[in-house]
Image (tube, rainbow, N blue to C red; front, side, top):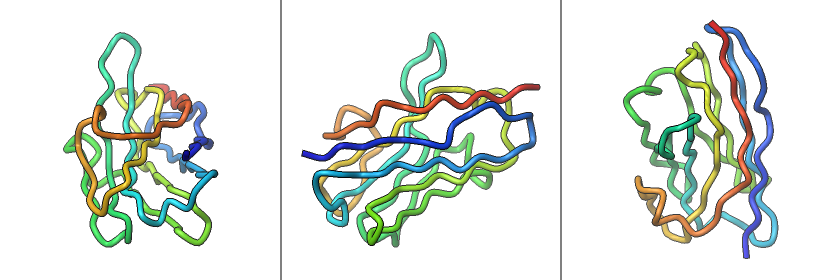
Length: 124
């Protein structure tokens, strides 16, 4: 079993930055692809970014491309999401997810493990 715990969310003004972390326990996640998803109030959960198990390949949803950066530190068993130039439409609960495979998936239903989420609120 893998347990994932997100942190780093909060309230920020538009144009600001936040860095989310996702700490994994229970097993090393070096053999897992990892991803970030988000869910705004009243909307479906959507893909944000993903990273392969080595960290060598990343992928971003169009709305965050060029503003967000996903990274991982396998020695620390931790996933990160650096979010810059935040917009009010980025407001959501952000979740990290893991799947035991080399390359990531883009659909939430394929991920095996999930964190509890961290709230990000961007004010105009």
